[in-house]
Image (tube, rainbow, N blue to C red; front, side, top):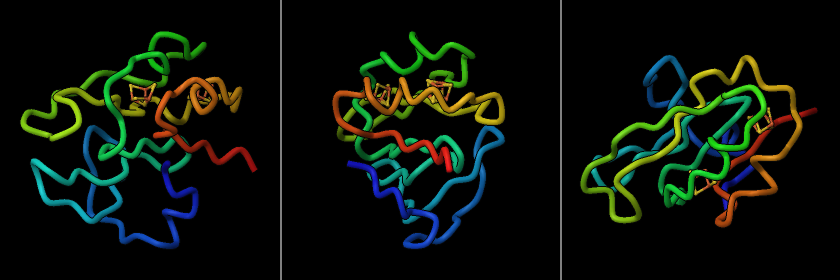
Length: 103
Ligand code: SF4
Ligand code: F3S
């Protein structure tokens, strides 16, 4: 599962599609955690899609991650500033790849 303390345990490695990326990053195998308020561990996400399909405010968009060992698509929390903290995505992800900081 995603480390909910990633912002303390990881270094900020940059930005992609307008969201922060938390390292380590070593593409194509290691892609880090994307997002801060809504965070997706790209090395755990297997492109199930339930988060994207069910988010009431369309926070997520698909991005291609060719040659990543787990899946060749991931969800970017592009609109994380729109999140209403409903926690649906956190509960629905089959591999616990998402953390939402609702505090
Ligand atoms: Fe969308 Fe709710 Fe997840 Fe926020 S917590 S990203 S509103 S599903
Ligand atoms: Fe990935 Fe989980 Fe969403 S596997 S696509 S973060 S439901």
